[in-house]
Image 1 (tube, rainbow, N blue to C red):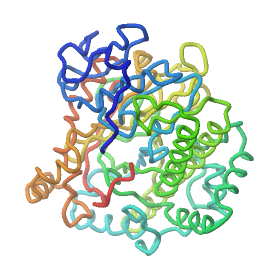
Image 2 (cartoon, one colour):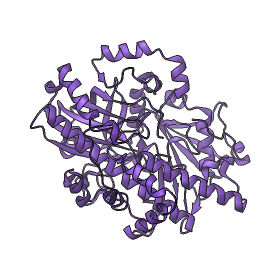
Image 3 (spheres, helix red, strand yellow):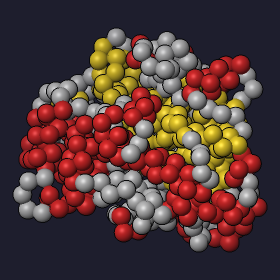
Image 4 (cartoon, rainbow, N blue to C red):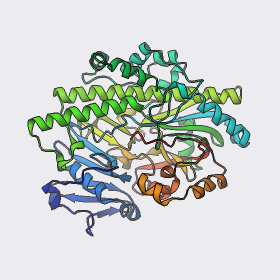
Length: 514
């Protein structure tokens, strides 16, 4: 993605991209980037030397801009970091006093979810069975940007009134029951529901009324509701997996709590708030940018995607409400997709049962306790990582083990389920959200060979719903997943519980949502 690369004058006092020594190593897979000659706390970097050498210049400039932005107290660069809008994708930014739309991202609450099935791996060994499953799933879950129910004849229609409840109430047991999804799944979400700036549902109802009154805004919202239960384009996907639990005792214990079944089929999904979240984010960018122009407020690094608002202001309240409306949509979108995927499996293989392992976001700002005081932790392409014993997990199934961390790699190298260690405090209890891009979409289209990509999937015996697998999503367009995971482990942030081995992929070649 192209971003404004201008940096403010202050950033010139710190090590800049292209110069040697800009990183100061602090461990095998950790480093810092000093800022303002040590006048403020440095940027924390998670990554082996090989990973650090792959950070592009724009990414590092954006990290410095983010650290020098008003109210920001900490910035963390994860090993999957690369340039984004305003702040890098793959970063964590902490502020006790301000809220920032850019370091949340355009696709509000883009998330991962994992559905564990009671099928042994042998049940999907046959290609005909896998092809039938692919067809049954795409009959129910549209893919691509902006597509609605017309592309999936067996999709679940969501009435407008229920759509209003979904974006204001989230994945409550009542909402899930009306959608035909198991009520128990609400307990398997990082956050099953999000409330307004004042902690109430009423604030969201009032905000939604404001957003959908006047002109054709009501019809626009109806169109976004029709996208519930669908995957987006770009890096969004659904994958049929085989679970391989690690042999360590810690991994086996965590897997049991998580509900993972070694040698069995699972389904991993990556998607977010679709057109609804993008609409809300775009509206917030425009509204805040106009305020900055009207008031003559300088932008951090001159970057228009680093607009912000002080907590308690009308602008901050409006953003927090919109973020919650988008986040509730994203949560329920995952719940509906998983219900439809389970239904598809049951159509092809009658009697199959499934349970949700977890849903976890990587594009959200959450109010957490950082350094013994409340702050908004912005995770953009970053995943929460609370270890066992963390106060926020009290009363959850994961209080003693830590919660599941779902990290997608690529279909051929696999994905990982991890669990946080105490060392995650170094990164504000966060880890990367996947492998991270090493090649822009444009570069991938220009340099990668389509026939080689498709042959590589044939050799790996991984089926897809694509006539040609998208070149900009090919495994080679992403960083070395093993090196990324090595960074996380060597930094002491998390350990591996299981690997997920892809058997087929649901994908779309449209433009990415995020």
